[in-house]
Structures are given as C-alpha cells and as structure tokens.
Image (spheres, helix red, strand yellow):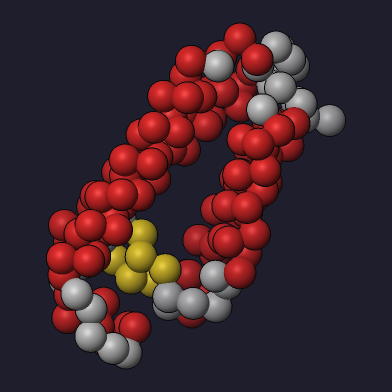
Length: 133
C-alpha cells in the first residue's frame, strides 16, 4: 500500500508541475485559466487519493477505481478526438502518430493493470470512516 500511495503522490507532483501548460481534457485542449482550474482539481483529487491510501480509507478504494476509469476514458477520448495537427500546434514540433498511439495505449494498459491490482487488494482498505481527518 505504501508503494501505491507513493505512486499517487507522484501523480500529484506531476499534476502540480503541469500548471500553466495546455491540458487535454475529454477531446479539447484547454489553455490559461481553464487549464489552471483543471490542474487544481486534478491535484486535489490526487492528494485526496494519496491521503486516503495512507489511511486505508474504504471510500478511497472506490474513488481510485473511478479515477482510473475516468483517466482511461479521458485518454481514449483525447486520442480519438484531438487531431495530430492540433497537438503539433500546441507542442510546437512534429508528432509521430504511431508513437502517440503506442504511448497512449501503454498508458491505458498501465491504468487497467493498476486498477486490477487495486481491485484485488480491497481487503487493505479497512478504515470505514467517511472523513480523512
């Protein structure tokens, strides 16, 4: 559980470090204030998941599975809806479509494997409290 908590703490740090950058979300690339708001809420969610993991909160088990499912759906939607031209415009350099497909497929597989791991370790989430503090 400690390694899983560390992983979600790492996700939190990655999310916070992307503040100010364009963010793809459900098929649209957001810039500026909208991107900042999305990063803020994603950071809060990742922080909650980390704290819930450290406290073995039962509610966190459900939230982890829901968050991972949403991230997989978001990745698929972004892959299908956002064009290579849009990405190249935002990034400022040429993007390899095959590499983009391979990396996003790898991310989806990793999220699904992580979700299976979390699903099978439900017994570790023993804290039935609805509140973290």
